[in-house]
Length: 177
Image 1 (cartoon, rainbow, N blue to C red):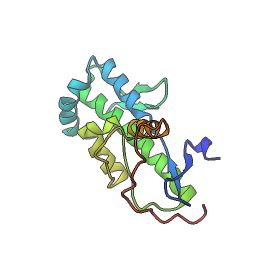
Image 2 (cartoon, rainbow, N blue to C red):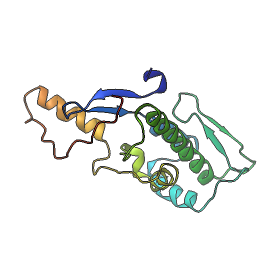
Image 3 (cartoon, rainbow, N blue to C red):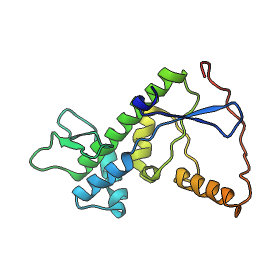
């Protein structure tokens, strides 16, 4: 089933279209590691720059299960570098993204594009590693698209907002749906 693959299937706003969605849930994990290092969102830009100067080697820190309640950090030496831990954290999220994209492709076939959303995209390191690991992706102008979409639909349902205008054309449905 798709749920066991951590993928949701839903009806698209275009008639006869289906969409697949997966949630990385990496943002909360990223913030957890910032807190662990005594850092916050204000430190992200500096950490990003320092982490981008590093390369991942067999002796680099490793983060696993960044999206779960209990993540792990291993392979840390006596003098852990916050930038290396930050890079390992972001890499863990992007490895998860790669797994979920692969599952979607196994179900629906090859994709034409990846659209990434969420607050983590404020990070240059996230955007860079996402491109390195997943390839090119689209990023809407509005980063927090799920929150915005929920608010727009709630306003529409309550009759306080006009219907949402769709300004895009549908993507042909993959075979097998």
